[in-house]
Image (cartoon, rainbow over all chains, first blue to last red; front, side):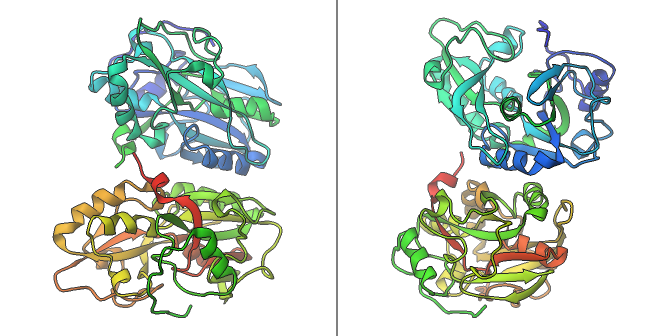
Length: 266
Length: 266
């Protein structure tokens, strides 16, 4: 994945955003189509679909399922008029757990037996964080959110297992409680932080070397706050090695028609 | 299912409750083991398991999945030391969608390829309702909660489809907002009401003739409030007719080791 310094765009409706990405625009989607949910993609053959759905059910913090496209289905009410094979800015293709391609569209790689899981993304709660005056460092620094493979194993499900992946946003100590309060209301997009303040305990050796996305500068005195991340299924695919899997490229999400408001509870 | 007028028992730890039911005690479980989650059971052959899990994912208000026992698994951390085939007070066995038996245990009916889904039950939020001084009519009247098959279809998933089933608790008009507020915090056990005040619009013809459970007397001026119900998968099985399905008998739940507190968000 190429790292692209980017400016959050003006308000682009989701259908128009998908059209731009379908036409070939390749860039991280943080800040795109504010007010609408962005989602992670993981698609696996039908033979692994039950295990993947069960993996998601058992790891709801990292894998909150917002939609499933059954075998042969390429669109849904979440991407009205869209096509899951073309409407994401960048994809990753895995064969037997190995990353073999990062194309802009995957029409040639797709198979009729692939089941596609759409998984909530923490970008959804960045809008209410910003509204509450909380800083979102990777947006301010115009880079992709940093993501880390942790030393914590997810609950396995049949043939699927792997480590927890987290995203990180540094925060001033006096705003962390607000971040917990706000993000807790969005369990469908990873909810509350799973870890606050001690990267080593999560098995993260170097906070400046994320496994996915870009490093962010942590201002003096700020604390790293970690949320479960929808890249977790990709790490599971890398470990579990199904014959084929297709995902979005980290940070390059599917922009959906689902209003963020609908993900807020209670 | 025999209707049993019953008195809520003194505090019985979950493991002891399961032991009593394993030994043959047959009674509704509302009020049992306060503080611990009770769950619905639906078990189907592996061939239908993906569809059933997807049905649950697409209908999270009625089918919040709290656990899945994979084929060949009879226990889990939710029922430590227990056995899903014996520890529920009463079961229902469906063949090709027809109810064929209501035994106290299902060891003889179980098959190695059955996948068992444990689905949250609204009994969990009755404790915080009672703590907030809200009346729970079926507990006061010592009967099973009334449940109704509605005219609303659930979102289908492959071979599985069926109508929404709801439970009903009548409330004084000035306490309904409190009930919404409290139950909203428990999305894993059906969450907020899905309908307040107009049974006809849900397709319920006679509020005094529930399809499952017992009728409750509605005090003058009180309003019927409806929550999505974990009996929904049973209605789906009756409509979709997999060759075999095993469930709990409505109101006769599996008492788990999961503290209700863990189901509260945020």
